[in-house]
Amino acid sequence: MTKILFVCHGNICRSPGAELLLREMANRAGLLSSFEISSAATSSEEIGNPIYPPMRAVLEERGLDCSRHRARRVRRSDYDAYDLIIGMDEENRWDLSRLFHGDPDGKLHNLNEYAGLGDQDIADPWYTRDFSGCLEEMERACYGLFEELTGVVFLDFRHSADIPALYEELRSKMAWEPWYGENLDALHDILTGLPHRGRRFVLLLPETDAPPEVRLYAERIRRVFQDSEEEIVE
Image (cartoon, rainbow, N blue to C red; front, side, top):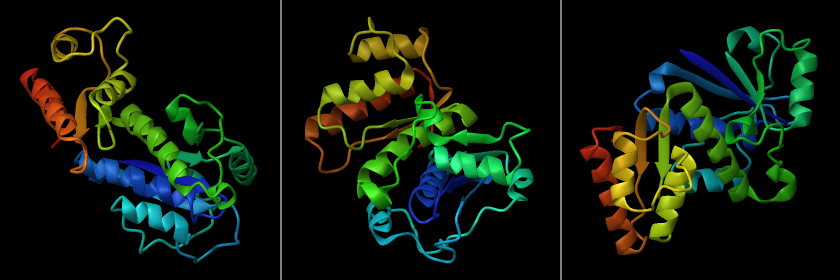
């Protein structure tokens, strides 16, 4: 079992959001029992409080249940209890390093590392007021984290507005080379012999309000994955 602790300043916006996102991914992939996922605060300001209402609203729009969360403070014993301790910004990482007297086992990380952004902070929406943007940024990083831990690639077509957007998602998540064509034959060739990322795939199809041609094309993409004998988690 892999144990992951997300940490932010108050444990009422970013870290519980990341916790719920990653748990949803693990559940969709059928791997929830392989993880223990939690979150905590570096400060004591919000201890015992629920998720901040504007963040709760954007999480609930995604169907994520926030009702049981109550903020807690990170403890020194958490260093031994978790395999990965993932902060949101430089201040979080500094606070954690001070609490744990360094990082002898290399457990401390920045969430945006997993989006390929290194030490770039995920801004606190308490100040920016961009709760939806924060959630989208954390989701990209959590997809990368989940892929690194499991080899499962999420292809998220839910908000694709047109067919080029479907291929943009394929390119970004599967590391397509620039010369690969954007057509179903090229997708089949990649899946059956050319390099790509991922051992298993979760395809999140467009929402019901997406243009019909986009939903139909996404279904055709799913059939190519099936015909190529790739493992798809339904």
